[in-house]
Length: 399
Image (cartoon, rainbow, N blue to C red; front, top):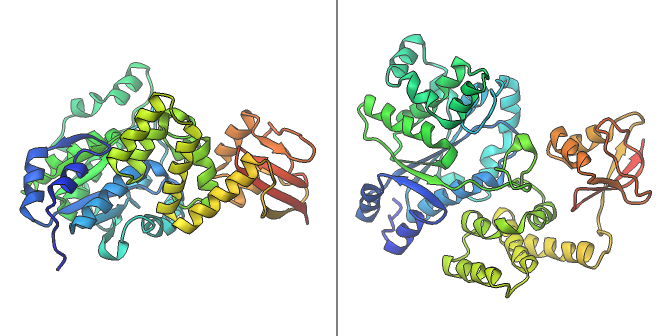
């Protein structure tokens, strides 16, 4: 059986690095120092095919716990993904079909495995227990909470004030996430601050079923490339499965004011070193570009390897600092009449059609040879070399 590491410094860093709040912190710290093996839960809904770096903060926190010898319970919400979480939404999230969710989740465990040791983790799908619940069990669970508990949440209160619809389905989501904690006997649940209500629901649910309430670690939210919260629906993501050069380029395109928060949440560069970089940036003693290049290397190395990170940096320097063309440009053959948007989305050059539309609106879809800028999402895919955003290149030829 794996030894439990009770190193005080490591434990204190787990409870502080990139953390906004710990519910039950003193008790949790005592349990970690006692050498007790804890069950650490994290869940993610497959609302898109990619796990993005917005999930990196909690996943790295899982790895920290795993390195101490604790048991990781990684839940893919194949049932909750259909229902839809409204925690960070200003409008009702539409339900996904079972087919869409199954398609999206195909590589979720493999993507998480770029950071975690998945062979040493418990891998779960929450449909295994949520599909079995009937009205009697759901009614019993719903009785634990009041409607006022739900509508007191800021985003729900805002929607109601603005006269927007709030469905009863949305009210049920926290019950389901809470029941995940019951079925997995979670000692700790990790999530972003936007998940606070749902994770607290797990504590109430566990008490109802005679279990000790889980401790909670809430991590800060990771900003997307446009400064808003990273979200697949907004197309502002850096995905764990992105190719090394693409990932590196995306990091280099992010806002300078997010550099330090990324180091804290999305890397494990020592905290003291991060503070030195923060001070140097604040004092104007270093170029933000140089610090960002270090960040890009660290993130690519985490998701891929040191070798791939170095290769991505060399490609970036050659292409964007020395203004040379990339050595290898992906070539796609397209039929006449097919839109550029459809071609790039099918080839995963863009993560979604929404991302293409956003880039087109920003004037960031350009034919390198003719200098034509495409703003119409229905524009035909013309032959030639295309630059998509700041870092992506593709050559389109006709069938």
